[in-house]
Image: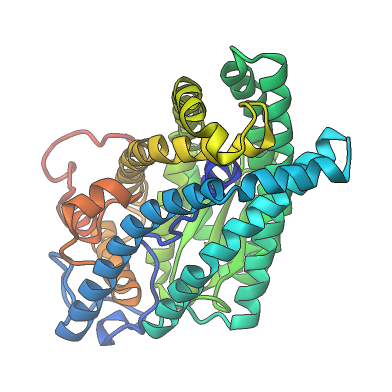
Length: 441
């Protein structure tokens, strides 16, 4: 499920001025071994395993990812402290106020300088992360294309961040004792608007999309049979093909948007590397998010987390500024220069919020896996084996960790681990056990 824009708003626009790791559990593109060839699996899968060479690579890569995520958290705190300690934030405020008397333009200047400073301090690690991706054959994206995507992300951050910073400080000045509540209320429709327009405006900035009926019409009948069994009507106009092969060899599909913008997207690499049954299972998984209302549920949960997060910031920022504000050149909370201090607090509390968000995400992903097994039951010889083979192939391509660190899973995984998912695929059989399926009766 793709709730990227939700966290673009909450974590990028408010928190992601701090450096952060963009590593995901389900990334990676090592060339598959012979068992990953298209077609039926050579033998029945009973568990997720990797051959010795891929096992070593997967273990090394995922240890590095775990370490990088921990490092990114502390590095983010350090960078925000550095911007405050060196009074760069105060200088940015002075430059913005000297340039214009208009508050929005001041917000734009200050936010742009602040965001670019953070981006430059983070850039060496972004480059290193991409280099490791290429070293492990995770990324196939050329450096010019990568640089263009990086630049577009910074422009988006500055535009969205400037608007939110301007609103935030306007609310702080007008409601100094309830700013956290009013800003939260104002932010919700903005969040929904960004999430709504993302498939139309933001996503196409980074990838190319076409109707699935144009690029892979042979899949449409099988997908429509699954949607009918689910009691849904998802027209082909809501099914999209995305070109991912110019950036990665990894396979994926996701659901995004809501209302008129809701759509299911299947990557071209998925169609190239997976059998038709496996593609249908992937579709069933995304359909599960669609039918079970996970998009709205995660939006509501994220809004609740943001409420708690910003309230915690409100309760803590006064103490922090009273102790260090003068030393950092910050006049008061309504000073533009206080933004890194507020983000510093939100980053610390946000770590816990992110763990909670990942926990809920893993639960939703597990439900979607179960739904996919149930909705495809009877439409293919063995949905469990199709799913297991799909994830065995994906794991070999993506170097999924066969023995993930439980702490890493708890803190950072937004999907269940490969071993857990494959185990569920090969053992879930309520029909053979005389039990009722959970979702598709």
